[in-house]
Image 1: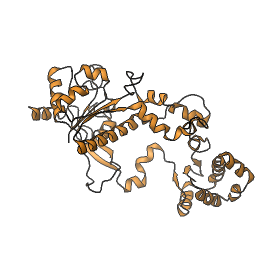
Image 2: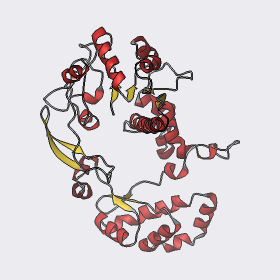
Image 3: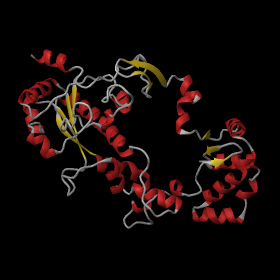
Image 4: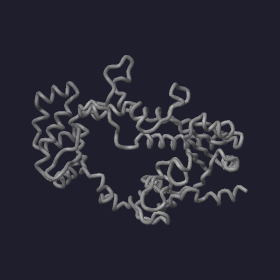
Length: 361
């Protein structure tokens, strides 16, 4: 199966390397400035051809590629891709059963259809920037420090492609598929956070109380912090017994809080009061022995040294001809029918252009 992904291009003097507007390729070291760390991860096992679709010869090359493809994915705005000659109807004329996937910022039947979308924009539009203020009381809207909306939309796009392929296998039909980033991330975040606003009329405000509880934070230990999740009544009771706090669950204050649905705040405050008495390692041993979900808080800088990830080979050291040595993350999903072989290295910009053009001649 062949799938072609089209990304935006800009003037050669305005961006990195050969003028490709692709922040994932931003420099990772003193070598090729188009071989960024994100590119090394997300573009493994792919081939690269650089095309200027305003150039007639390059546009003809892409038409030839579309005619060979099962899937064509792009994230160029609708009017722009139509001007370039690669809207769905013209691609379907080249390949009648093409699966044409358009990653849009917003659904194309709404008032935001023509707007640009980036992660920050989508976090703002979906209410995500108002989650932290609900937790810590600081009224300033803030972004979650992750390209979370971008990545979620990518996963929705993968699901959409696979579903369209199954449809094609069953019916022989291709189709146009729209993957709007705004709607994808709204669905992702509101799965739990629509909460009491789901019903009509609503029985309460939006926001999932357990996630928004300001007392639900990592707990201090004698030498660090630990995450503890007393998720069920049984695990909560076991935890309170271990902490010497069994009386809390029988107290009138807990009964009143349970009636109001706020009992976990009391539990979290009690945990935070007791956990400084032992080290993180001591607590983790005790919790493991008593089947209580817990894990040490690990600094971002130290995750690559996590003993579990080391033992499972999650991080693999490899060498790239353009970058040198680097650490890659093994794809986390394991397939019993496939060998656990490393993916091909991420390609350099236009690395396969000559070979691909030769096949099309």
